[in-house]
Image (cartoon, rainbow, N blue to C red; front, side, top):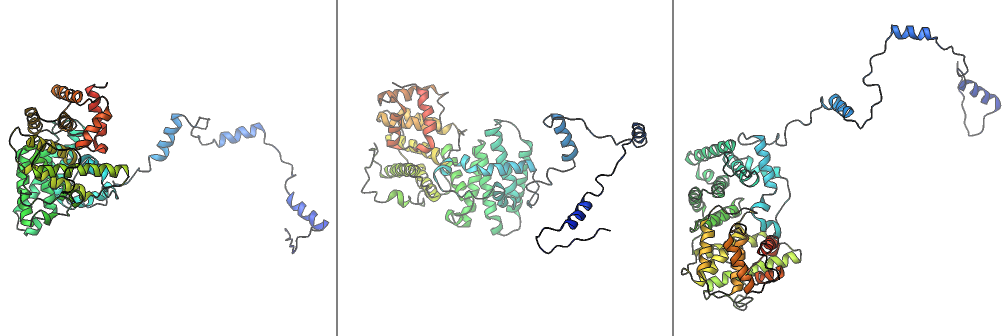
Length: 465
């Protein structure tokens, strides 16, 4: 029996107590033990063979074998994940998960591709992930299918470089979306449901996809139907503020401009006014900057508004101050709709200036990043207009050609463009890129948007002194 030793203080125990403690500590440590004989060890090993150890020999942990062994033993029973990122999203209709992933990925950088200027110079809310932007689309079946189709069309043409390929899955979503949209419009539901924001957004996607793929007639028909829906809703202002408002206006302008037709959403009498920030005290500074060879007040005003907008953008970039997106949208609408409605005599100075401003507005407000228009009518008409007008200053001719080079023409394939730009550069005594920048900034140029591609165009001219 082991006695308990109780101590109430930190004093050292007496000699008898210390001997008692030592005797208990050492108990069993000095007992004699006999080692088993070799015969006894062999008999025990034979009677009780050890379980085969898995890879008991030493193997370096860095080898591929041990890594695969660990993966096979421990990773296999544990699934990487259960379900997908969208398992808890209730979609209005069935869509392949791969295509949903494409829609989400595209939505995360859509503004940078579709509206490069807005992503560069304007404050644009970027909070939330692509899945957050997916929720409104997922709630409406026609919009879900048509959006999936539109995204697949963009991926095929711009990323996979297969503009003529047939994407069967995308075509099925297009057919399904159109069928559901027709069912809604022909059904017995009320006008509020038929003309809802979802319906308008779906038709806008249809028009935009048709226009992007080069189907001009289909895009025009979609826009005419959309204009009727907007009219019944109470006009464009009644739709303002919805998610499809900006895309609807840009689609209308692009289809009209590239197709050589009039827009359908605004007529000549109800175009929104110019932004006050760009038109204040216009009478006092009507001759600011470079003098224009035009005598039409409306055209001169449109030019001044565009030029001030460019200056405002450059100042904002230099001072690290972003613009409000409303200013970008309002400038686009006010200037481009007015230019499309203006009429001048063929081969006149006013017409070539109008065409140059339209090309600039198309590039700044409407053109997708690194996507050249499929429609040849617009760039061909611009080329014919410039070639037919020869009584302009070489600086302005340089600007007209240069704007076309960064937007609708290709310097690598259009030999006439290289020759024309070289001639203008020689007449303007352009010897380096800074000289070209000075001329471009005198008219209309956004450095943040086009300096990089502009430098590439200039280097291709090989006019350095």
